[in-house]
Length: 259
Ligand SMILES: NC(=O)c1ccc[n+]([C@@H]2O[C@H](COP(=O)([O-])OP(=O)(O)OC[C@H]3O[C@@H](n4cnc5c(N)ncnc54)[C@H](O)[C@@H]3O)[C@@H](O)[C@H]2O)c1
Image (cartoon, rainbow, N blue to C red; front, top):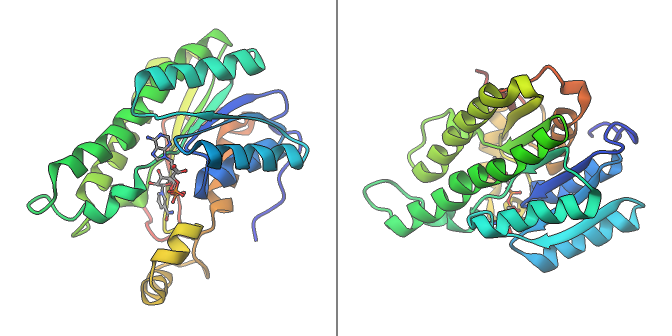
């Protein structure tokens, strides 16, 4: 399906993946490690993070699991300190966590419980901002580095449901443009990946066959997405191959949303 990891592309780099226990983040952590990065596997689900770190080590890579709640600033600060202590510095981060468990309540702005709106904002937007806030100074201390945030095609299409989710993803797109504009000259790059539907285990279980068929009909490419597709783009964006890519939002979606 996707191409083979390039073993040395991220050699010597230390990176954080925040939201790495399952789905896209787990695939990203494994891919970055397979390309030579030393990875801090951060997630609110510590057993999940430990399992991913164990798998990476079993594959010959380097990884440290950390429990982090990205909505909590002290927890984010500790995550970044762990990376610096473990690997002597920080070269990049994939900020991927999303409060996916709240999505069923993200109905519409008239109906939804405000606690759902606030909960999604706290993780998907404030949490992504908090990781950038604590990672950027460490990147600057090392002479530069890269942030990749997981956004979504939901930021670009009108939908009758998921208003909080879509608003946070549009906010992430603004956040990377800010970070790129503010610190680009000092060697910091910030980009976002906007996936289309990605067949994680959770999506495979929850999305109906009818929905998958409908989405495939709207996708120019002949298949739906896999976590490995997003992981592969993350590896490129965190690598020096993307050293002139800054402040961008890249849809990785088989061409579903052409902007
Ligand atoms: N799967 C898709 O179709 C799809 C499409 C577009 C965008 N995305 C985005 O990709 C990202 C990953 O989604 P996924 O589909 O792999 O879902 P997932 O539920 O498998 O992964 C989300 C991860 O984030 C972690 N997390 C949740 N809240 C956290 C917090 N407060 N602090 C730290 N970690 C936390 C979860 O424990 C989980 O491991 C999300 O940002 C999501 O919005 C997914």
